[in-house]
Length: 120
Image (cartoon, rainbow, N blue to C red; front, side, top):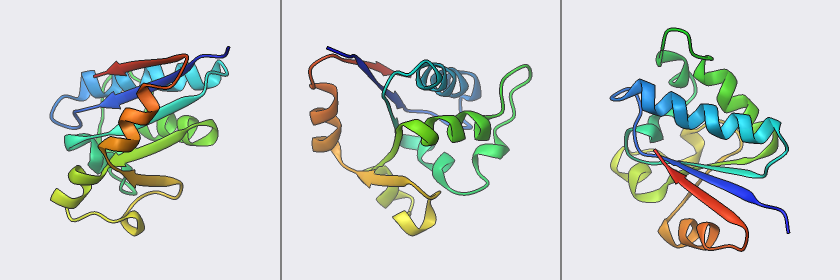
């Protein structure tokens, strides 16, 4: 049985250090060959909009766009449906490959066999 990782990020520019930690863990897992699903909720939803991840600048940290590209290359990135709606975001506003989905999809993912879920 292979294991997979679901990382839910609940913060963005409002808490850049915690946000970057979530992206770093997800990207590290992705480059290690672990299937990764990254969920962007709350203020993290903005990071799926082109150019917004580059605005998060954290000294001594890998730039967020690089981490996001790494995750998108092998895993999936999802923006919470309610969070997107509250910010008037549709899939056409997001980076290529990013989807919008709701809580039922999140629950299905985290309850899958061999899944480890982390929330930041």
